[in-house]
Length: 391
Image (cartoon, rainbow, N blue to C red; front, side, top):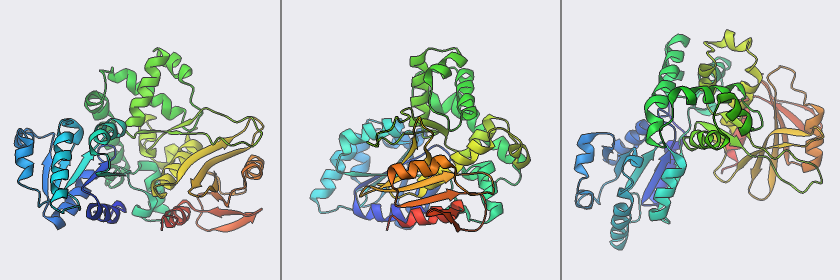
């Protein structure tokens, strides 16, 4: 088992608050992580997709009130939204008895709906964590490991598959399961083939400014439906909308967000790219690498840091702008080639914003200055620097 960085954070939160919610796409390892912690704490595990476990909660308050002395793990909590008021009452009862540490660990696959449901009833009682697919700090920073993570993506079953063929097969099955079954649980009925074409188009347009009208026209649906599809994929933590940085710099700024299919392995599966050699000759390679770097950096960034991009109509551009508390900015350019010198647009953008630190992420193995205060750096080393900003 690959040790997940979130485990130590989860242990701390469980000791501090009565309920912790872990969000993340299916198959990222939420259940494995919860069971690893539950084994240490003698927790009770209930899978709400299991009829047997749901039957135990037919009288939920009666069942759970007799187990206030143990951590209860509730998997796929979105399947039972009626539990949230019950949990609130039990948490408050335990608090009156003087217990404030973790009582419940809730696991869910959709972010906004689950946060809305839990936020309305567990406000002030719950803490939220996101479990992403594996990242470069969890898989190791060797060149082979990094390339493998980029090609296969970070879903554990895909990354750990014995061959590229088996990894691709797993990702295709994952996509099919989401399209045919999982997505139906979170929204209105959507034709699987239509959503597949929509998702595939997002992969082709990896890293491009969002144009919902173009997506709708090419798929043959109306703009409102196209926007709803995107909202659903973002809610399921499968697609990222990277917002533009808005600052009073006296420039005409690009205002549309950029979209990325968050897992690079899913990008490649959607585009039928089977392995490294096919990827190296595919037009998506540059934007696939850009999305891979952005996801890995944002996955390890401290909770209060936010990611943006910056682009002006005059050509000034920063691929990833990290905003830390205290108005501290890190500017990051992402290059797939081995020449890590930044483009002129990056220097123009840095003059506009005055970031504290400036980096060019490239696929090499060494870190070195390239002039004008810019550091060329491998993705794993930058991930370590960003992660350290949380301490």
